[in-house]
Length: 377
Figure 1 (cartoon, rainbow, N blue to C red):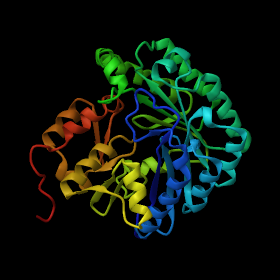
Figure 2 (cartoon, helix red, strand yellow; figure 1 turned 60 degrees about the vertical axis):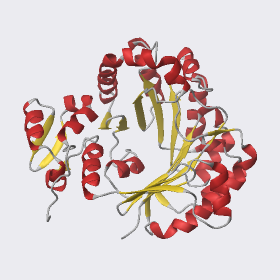
Figure 3 (cartoon, helix red, strand yellow; figure 1 turned 120 degrees about the vertical axis):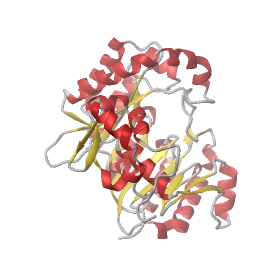
Figure 4 (cartoon, rainbow, N blue to C red; figure 1 turned 135 degrees about the vertical axis):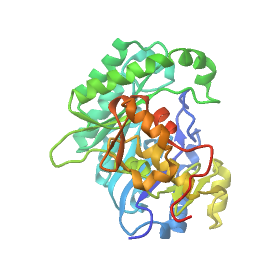
C-alpha cells in the first residue's frame, strides 16, 4: 500500500511562550484560529494523495492544540483522516471537563500532557503556566472522560534541579500511572531566552545529565515501563502496545506528511518544511496554492545515515545489511569491543551503556567524511 501512513498537524497557538521553547509558536492570534483550521484542511486536501488509504497515526502538536476554540478544534478533528492512533498534545491548564469529553467523543485515543515537572519553583523557572495541581487535575479529567492512553512529558537537567527533585517528579508521575512517559534532557536551544539566561549553567552540569538519565531509566524500568527509545518509556500491559506509533514511524525512517506552519514532511526521498510565517501560509492556501517551503532532496547516503542515527535510538535492532554502506567497520569493531554496541545474527543494537551515551555512539559508527559506497554502484 503506497503513501505515507503518518500525518503530523501543527497548531502554533499558545497563551505564552515557554522560555526554553524553540518550536514554531504564536502568542495571541485568537482571532485567526478558525481561519487557520480552514486552511490547514485545505492543505490536507492538496496533499491527500500523498497519504496511504489507511493511516497508522495522526498527531496534533504545537504550540498548544487544546488552546483552539471548541468549534475550531471540532472542525479540525472532524476533517482529519481516520488513524489507528490519534494523539493530541495538551497543556494541563487548558484541560476542562468539556474539552476532555470532546476529545474522546471526536475519536482521540491518546493525549500527550506536558507536565515537565511537579516542583513549583522549577516550573516558574521554565516559564510554565500550569502548576502541579493543574497537571493532576487535567490527568483526572481525561481519565474520567474515558481517555485510556495518556503520556506525560517530564524534563531533567533543569538548573537547580536536584536528584531529590527528579526523584520526586518521577514519583509524582508514577502515582498517576500514565501509559507512557517521555523524559527529555533540557537543552539550551540557541536563540531562546532560556539559553541566554541559563546556557552557561546548563553547560556546566552536562556531566550530571548521564547520571540523571541512569536514574530515570532505573526508576521507570523498575516500575514496569519499557525503555523503548532514548527518552521514551511505555508501560507494559498484556495485549497492549503502548509505545507511540507516530514517533516510532519517525525513528524507523518511515515516510510522513506534515501540515501547518513550520511543519516538516519526508516522502519518497524528499524533505520539505513549510515556512513559519502565518500570513504567508494563510495567503497561499486561500488562493489554493501550496505554502512557501524549503525543499531538500535526500540521497541514499543521507537516508542511510539517518536510519542509523534514528534507528539506534530504539531498543529494537537495525539490520546491518540495510545500513552497511553507511557504517564505519573499524568503529563498529572498536565500539563492540568496548561493549557499547551489540552485533548478533546480522542485527545491530546499542547496549544499555551505549544507549546512555546515545547519539555520540551512533555518530561514531557512521561514515561521515566521504560518501558511502552503495550497493550496486
